[in-house]
Image 1: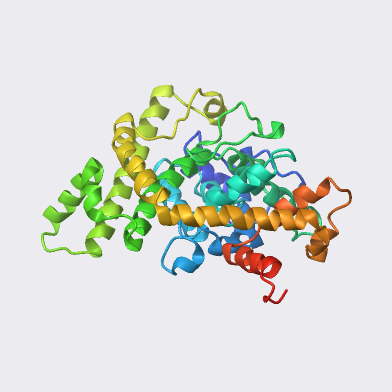
Image 2: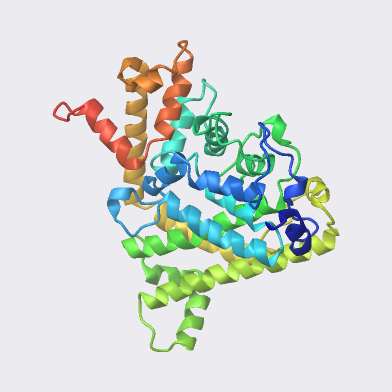
Length: 383
């Protein structure tokens, strides 16, 4: 007999976890799978999507042609999923929903990271705007075209809600009314928010050191780095780089993950949370870092902003990205006949052109956008 997913979840998960039997379902009803939970199916649909594969060639901090060893949006998403599942398992929450949300949280990112998003936001200001979280939702609801019975991927309400409500210091969104904007997201979605912060803090730090844009000596001014480094050196007196760097970052990740698990457990117990309804009604997040660790993280985040995100080489690439995206966008707006025919066919009336062009550019990888710019503006490039 196949496993009964509902019985397994009831036995293993906490009472306030998102359980399959409590799901609000899909926009287009589908029969349940014999042995895969709804959230497992969501995860699998995300992994098989074109948008997910394209993340391999979308910028995290360093553009793809800068080197093969730096994080991309794809490897970042996988690292977020690994951290998020660890936290979910420790808190007895739904790992499959958590993983689906982690893998989907950056589907809507533009080429060239936040520089690309800022440019599209400016260009779309009077034409519906642009936000990468809401674009992720648009991808899974509409733009992925794989099934005969419905548009998009037809994900569960809980996965769609978690995508729209993804929130970090970089990400804020206007939530559609059907996804209950005034309620808190599930605990699984809250885990992905914290896992995202853990991943990009530490992995941007790792890539910054590998690139030479961050000097390890400069990190001595950051207390949490210095203390962690001293602990590693005491434990392994003869350790050298790159092993030492890897062990420091590994320990920093462990520090943050452990803190989130402890602090979240404390908050859940103190609030007396008994079910998902109480999670959604609770004022404030239940999954978070402790005040002490937030205080320890702050100097590291200030350091990254100053030394990495504001580094002249990163700024130069961001400036180029703004120009590439804006020039491509304006070229298409000026003459929509230059778009591929499948996109031209989506323009039924003139005001459609902005949204169609925005969707096309947002779906580009870094290298595709660079190639397209050359085809549009370099007279010697084959079109």
